[in-house]
Length: 152
Image (tube, rainbow, N blue to C red):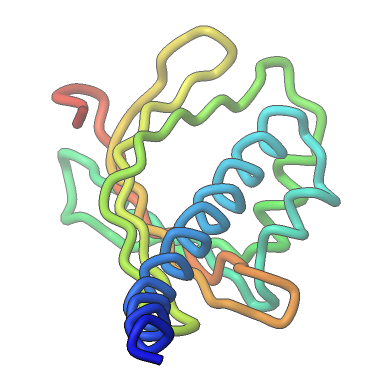
């Protein structure tokens, strides 16, 4: 009886960590699928990574004016990816912090963006995701843009 109680206690303590690991992997998979879809121009697959109402926001910087916020609706972004273009849109990220609380997640990820093989810019992506009945979905992406001093 004592062994059974100890086993149950150990399982109870380990299960949240196991779930967090599974969620962590699932979140990274959704984000990687988004970038794979961008590279291939697969709008159906890209749409499947997004929650309804998804938005992309970025900070636009210019020397002659203050920084401004640019907001792009997910559907507009999907059309842009699906429009034929000469070079592959190749965004490469390094996963940083992944924070999960129940059905909410946030990912901080340095990135470098290439048009084909040519480096374009870099910065930080911040993803917000929600857990739905079909898995994790991207709710928003917020990023900044730099051409030098790229984060690692």
